[in-house]
Length: 160
Image (cartoon, rainbow, N blue to C red; front, top):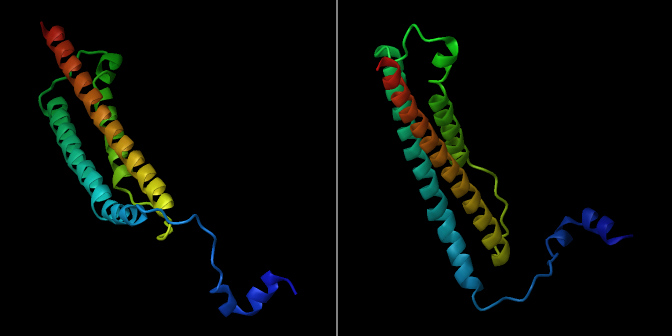
């Protein structure tokens, strides 16, 4: 009978399987400790930054929509394409919110607790990905602000 069939027939024998791994290095304990710190500290900090950015983006959208709606900022005599020019800032900010939600969203992460190299790689990759998404959200916010300022200048030119 093959080893696989024997292991299926005798589940207690499966627990005895020991996978080969590279020999331990002197700094493995340090990296295991760093991995635990990353799990506890790093990703929540990035998620908190995303929450703060979402708050800022929501405030910008509220102010901008209030300016468009209540202040009669868009002239009624403007053509449809001129009116449509006032919506890109909102779209930029919506994309920024989407990126922030991607940062805040949790993901399944499979770690092998006794494999420091695997922990380093996976947590490093996850932290880079979340930070990149947070950076993109920030750039979307800046793009929306730049577009809003340009549109305010354009609006002032329309009345002047």
